[in-house]
Length: 213
Image (cartoon, rainbow, N blue to C red; front, side, top):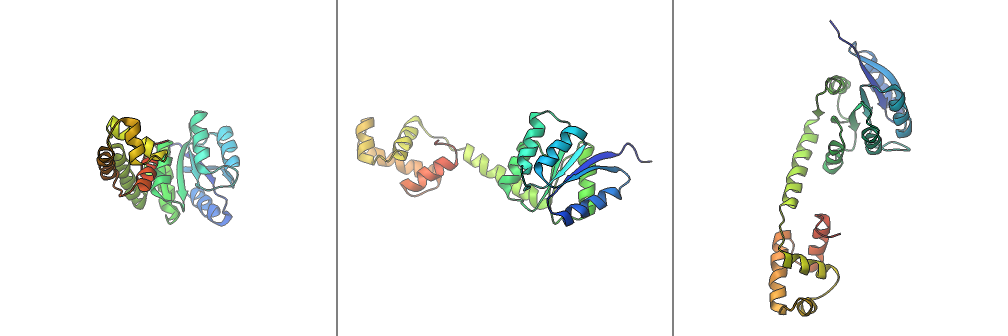
């Protein structure tokens, strides 16, 4: 016996691909299509009005991309859960989507049945991520954990900041009352912690890790 149907919105600006998902949703007795749209703005307007249980969104859409639609859903405290089905499965994009509250992320290589099964699962409150997406998420978490693990001493931070401003070892030494040799020792320790071998790479890596603004 089928319980209450899960209300679904489908948003994708590729009409052929969108129609394939729409047709599959309509064939499922546990799902109910409430809207299909082509742009992010249309998706957000329809979600605000219809409040479907699940919104199936592409990440890249005209007007507003999926990330901005997801952010607006969270900001406005709308009850709709978001499942991304996208060709963009880069680990940073997926990580950001999960951090923004997405409940699922599939590649566009997923079959229609897999998408509908994911919609049903998300509608029940579960989370669903494609295997290749899970691998990317794990890698991103490891990278970010490694980044967070970089601990600099107060002196190393001072030297890093002065290095980023373009000062050389003798100039840094005069400012901090250190010998150039001591400054160079601190720089070598910095390079080791950041996994780089020169000043420019150290500054670039420190900025990437959020150690410099």
